[in-house]
Length: 357
Image (cartoon, rainbow, N blue to C red; front, side):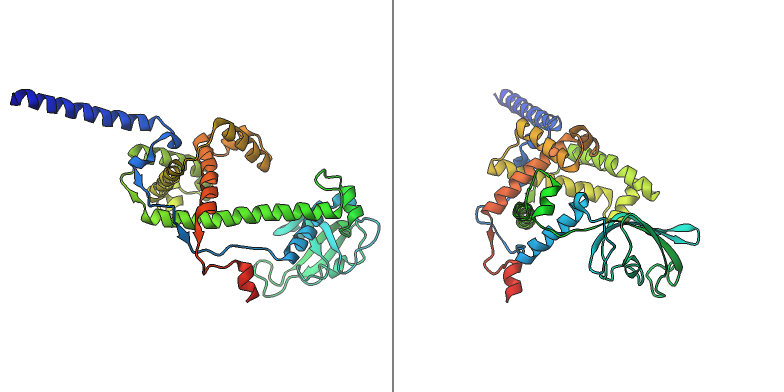
């Protein structure tokens, strides 16, 4: 009887070991979003999570400043070209700096915006442009200050060849209408576009602030049961593929790049990335968010459009790692959840409230 029972126990253990082996094997064949992360990390309760952060805000004048700045960058179609430059003008210009017969490093620029009289350039540069007609090249014989940061240029006599392309006109209804952008047709619509763009960016920034604080707190309380070797190997391969060309630019091996440039050994960086990815997907699974194929495809198209490239080029820029981008979209959903559900400590203030005290 004992012999039969022993055989049954051994058989049962064999089945259990085979099951564990099959699960591990199956996990190796899955993407991070497909793996049940509860096996690898225990995360704390996030229902009553509180973080102490300061949220950013914008003053009214910052919206106005942003409108002026954007207009200066898009106003070429209505740029003034029929009068000379005056003090106080914003101008768009090209310039090249020469020391002797050679152009010096950092002394060349195209489509540079400059306010005449702001003191942004070395003495004599801005004053030398007053009275210059747009479209005409002028040579400015100047001397760098003795205490200039670059030892090569400190006290050096140089020549700047400068062409004023156009003078920035007034920001008004007529000039905005002539831009024919399709996004705005008058000054009011232009300012609304700027405000909405800034508000969207501000919201995203605050989401990241809250979510990053929440993730840091969750990570500090999370218990990692194990970090699978296959995840570490896969992550290490991705890091090596991504950073080897960058390390080559430094003339060093990729391991030395992480050690001395990034300041973290490759092995430690690999483990850190994997833990972050495990935690992200564990949170996504716990709160019940997912990324459908349709969401992934449309998200990739939007992301590619943002960078002005095709989806194929976007993927190629990250070693064709679709998993990386899929997790990016998971992160957006997790961040949205945390921003909407995490409590900000009562003593935390917005930067606007702090500034008013």
